[in-house]
Structures are given as structure tokens and as C-alpha cells.
Image (tube, rainbow, N blue to C red; front, side, top):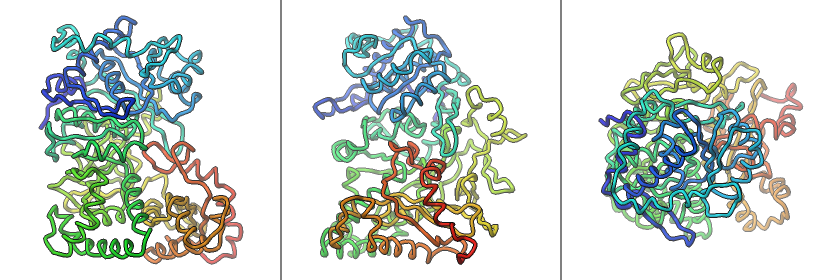
Length: 596
């Protein structure tokens, strides 16, 4: 078991690594460049010295606003090395939203990736305590400090360590605040989650126990580093002195997967869902492909239990299906992945089962920002489909009378920044943290999460319904991008469906449907009938009170950029309920006389 006490211990493991490719990044020409652990050390040390010259002290806040890139990690490690607190901010936020977070955190320095992000900070700077703006890109901006100018001599420092810098970093204690992460929230305004060095370090110690990761391994950092899941993953890979390859956008991920060929892949469920939908879309382009694909998937399902047990099927049918279809899906991930891990949102049985049928066992985990984040995770040695694995050995779990999961452990946060009232509300009298999730633990110790407590729908007939499992069943279909089940306090449930427009538009052409706009497309009778068949099929596997009596296909593809999804690609139900208030009201206009 690892004995990390602070995140700075992780940094020093990077510094002492013999790994020449500790970091990989894509340059302006699209070529991958590498630098070593010692080069990381010198860049972090050099930036930390600059922070010191500016008077940044222990406990001061430093905001980091940018996409995933090596400079993000340097800023992070440099802040933590001097005992400062970093404040990661999602680059998709607006200037106004960023201004609120900068003001609330009291950040003195903002490290930004691009001119676009600089402009956001500059717009709201007068409302904040920002003294310096550091720009990662080499762009001439009058009052910004170029990171490249601060680091220009870093690589020439060779392998010489700085005793004073090291001592200051080692003096940072486990109880010292490390980071202030503003949760995006699916319902209300963001809250600043305070995580200490000890919270995160203790979590890395135990979350890695079930995984054999070594220097020859590689992982692509593409989930937003503003999210604790991505930060935790990078720290874990650095701890094992393996390679972290930075991918700044989802658009570049397919290329990065083929070129880096990672051995560890951590993604939110939506990434896996999109891979499945793309595979099905490609197969639908010709009759022959569709028949071969359908046969292969059916063959794979017969051998699903072998995959779930971690065994390679030996039958001739499997081998042929693997050669013709499954290997191509695996190649889409780079062809070298040993650990497929899902987190950040529920994976869903349909997705987990489908991937097992094509030879990929996805190890689902679970946690929250407030828990640093991992509470439970499946491993190759202890795996059960549908569960989020067994709780970490240093985490206590308890199910409350109303089904809510309560937890305690060294990874649980001390509270919300400047919000003592909300902090008190989230802990019970015995200091168990209320996760807000409904769960159960089976006889073998595997944890199952069924839904968010606040998202449970209660029909007017008194039936409680968890919407996420139903939504996951809908998303298993090629033509469904996202879905939101509604009906709280109503007689019956209904659904809003946001299409996978790539697949839908291709199908519409094949069907001879002429629709100049997406609004006209989703209103076409053939399209509505196609989605009706999907809803009917899902309803066939649900209890009567869970079935969706009505639905509406919306002409928008929900996204993070447009505000319907959180950065971990979960639904923002409050936003969706507001945006589609008229459509939802139409479901229930004749509720009194409609059949429930």
C-alpha cells in the first residue's frame, strides 16, 4: 500500500522518476513531444520561485483556467509546492461565471491557457483580487505574464535539486488545504469544495491498490482537469511514474488514442456510449456490414460471462467475431488498453453489458468531488457488473433508513468554502457525510448506486421512480443522444429525447425524408414513429408505473456548451426543466382525464 501523505509526495515521485516520457503533449504542428520527470521538477520549481517573488504565500489561492495541457500540471504542482491553494475553473464558463468564482475564492493569480480565457478574466478583473494573469500561450498581451518567459531557463537547470524549495514542499502538511473545487451542480449554484492534501493523497493510496500500473503504462489526460476525477487520475499515473499524455479537447481524442495507444483509459460513461453509437452507425451503412455486426454482437453476448470473469473466450465463433468486429472497436481505443474504467456518472447496465459482449470489461467506479473522489471501484480481482465495486478499505459506508448512502473516511472533505451552514447540513450528528445518492450494498460487499436522492421522481400516485436507469436504457439506442425522464408529482412519466443527429440524419436520408431544419426533422411522422418504437421497447422492460406515456423529440443536441450538461456530462435537470417548461406542461395538459 502506498504511504503518500501529501500531493507534494506525488510530485517528488515524478521528480525522481527515470521515465524520459513522464509527460507527452501535442505541439502546434500536431506532433507529440515529451519531457522527463526531472524537467517537470525544474519547471515547477521555476514557476514556484516566480510565485514567491510576487509575494504568494501559504494559503493564498491561485486560479487555473485552461484545457488539459502540461502547463496546467506545472501550475498545479507549483502552487501546491509552496503551500498555496489552487482553484481549477472550467474553461467553458462565461466571464461572468468566472468572475463569481474568482471573487469568492479571493484568488491573487490566474493562470490561463489562451487569449480567449485571458479576455474572460480581464473583463471581470476589477471585481476580483487578481494581481497577475499568467498566459500559457505565447501571445503578446500587454498586462499578462507569459509562462514561457518565466520558464525560459528551467530546462537548463539540469538535474540539480534545490534544497530550500524541496524543504518548503515537504513542510506542507496533510491537513493543509490543497485545492478549492467549485462543483458545477446539477441543481443549484456552485459551492467551493475544500480538499486537503491528506484527503487526496489518502485516496490515491487506496484507489490504486487493485491496479498493476507501472512505468511502461500510459494514460491520456482528456477529462477536464477542473474535475477531481481527472486530477485524481493524473496524480495516480504520476505516482506510478508512468506517462501522462495531455489531450486538450475531445475533438482530438480519437487521434490521440490511435497515436498514444494508452494502457489505462478512464472516461465518463458518455464517451463509451458515443463509441458504441459510432460502431453501430458505421455498421448500419450497408446491409452486409449490418448483418456481420449483428451476428458478431449476438455471438459475443453468448460469451459475455467469460469476459466478465476476466477470461478470454476460446470458441471459433468468438475468435471470428473478434477478428471481424470486436478488434476494430478495441483499436478505436488504441488497441492496448488493459484497464477500461468509467466514473463521473452512472454507466448503466445496458452499456456495461454491450461492451462485455464485444470483449471489453468496463470497471465502474463511484465517488464525489467531496470525497476526493473515489469511494468504491471495481477491480480485475473484485468485479460485479452493475455495481460500482467494493468501497475502498479506508472508507466506511452505511445505508440510511431512506436509502441514502452515508460515508466516512480520510478522503472526505472538511467542508464548503465560506459556507458553514451548508457544510453542517451535509454531515449528520456522527459526522457521516450525506452523499445524496441512493444505494445498497450486497452480501458480498459490492456497492450499487441507483439514483440521486434529489432526482427521484414521485408520481401523484405515490410511486418513487429513479429516472437514470430509464434514461440509460433509452441512450442504449443509436438514435438517442440524451434523454430526460420527467413527471414528478404527476400521474405518469414522460420523456424529452435529444437525438443523436448524425445517426438520425443519415437514417432520414435513407428513408427519403426531406426536412430542411432539425425542427422539421424531429416533427416528421416517420421520425416520431421511429422514436415511439424505441420508447415502446424500453417500456416493455419496465414496471407499469415506470413507463413513459408520452415523449417529445427536441430539435437540439444537448451539450456542455449550451448548458444542459455538467462537465462530467450529466443532465442539468433544473436547466432542462426550465428550458422545456412548455413541452413538459403539454405532456400534462389533459392529465385529469388521461389514462395513467
